[in-house]
Amino acid sequence: MAVFMTIQLHGNIAYILKHRGQILATMVLVAFASGIGTLLFQTVTQNRILTPSVMGLESLFVLLQTVLIFALDIGGLSMLGSVGRFLAEGALLVTFATLLYRWLLSGSGMDLHRVLLIGLVCGTLFRSASGLMQRLMSPGEFAVLQSRIFATFTRADGGVLMVCALIVALVSLVVWRMRHRLDVIALGANSATALGVPYRRNVTGILLLVALLVATSTALVGPMMFLGLLIVNLTYPLIGSWRHCYLLPGSVLIGMVTLVGGQLVLERLLDMAGTLSVVIEFTGGALFIYLLLKKAKK
Image (cartoon, rainbow, N blue to C red; front, side, top):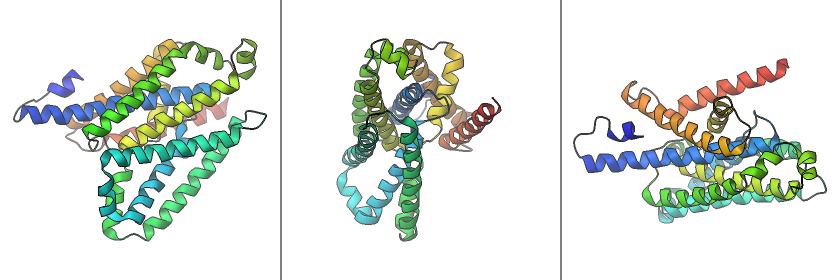
């Protein structure tokens, strides 16, 4: 972080520091939200391949952006303001996840596989609806939409960052207080219940926290499907422990190194030959395929 903020610092130093500070704050918040959210999701599902993205939240974000531009046009969006638009998008994403979880988990049994399957179906439905409306847009509206649905770390303003930082800080505090219960929940429903942990209530609360983190990250920078998968699957071997008191801060630190280091390499060594989101998605997608093949051979 110090290198990112001070390297080749010349010219209008105040402006450069402010601009780099916003980018750095965005990457730190996304590292918090993606790392912790994916770690919690994999703890609940007991599967190192699954990520919150399979629940259709990022596809819903694309659909939401498409509907806003399609229905309100570009002028109507500017009336909402950046903070208002961020809060509206995040609230809709969390509401969708809350309704989905309450509907699926209100029965007598906890069926996470059914949750994941319906999440995949909803994601496909959202992408299809987005594609239909995008074909009906004017070229100008479509260009604005494309700039919003691709992940970038340079567009968040100070007001949005403050709101996002408050949300992430509150959720992180709640998660840290329940770190020991997470160790027990990772053992499975039967073991957790036998050890006195109310498994159903805790898992429902964890899934809602995951939805809030993913919604915050997605509304802040845009959809990044494989970032959490990349961070967490680097965390497990590097930390070398199953205890969440080490995994939680480890995932955050590794996420920061991944994002800040990747941005630094792209800017200073590769002369911005690409974008960080594309590199992360490519690397994370390759890791996802490798994990699937590795699991299939067992």
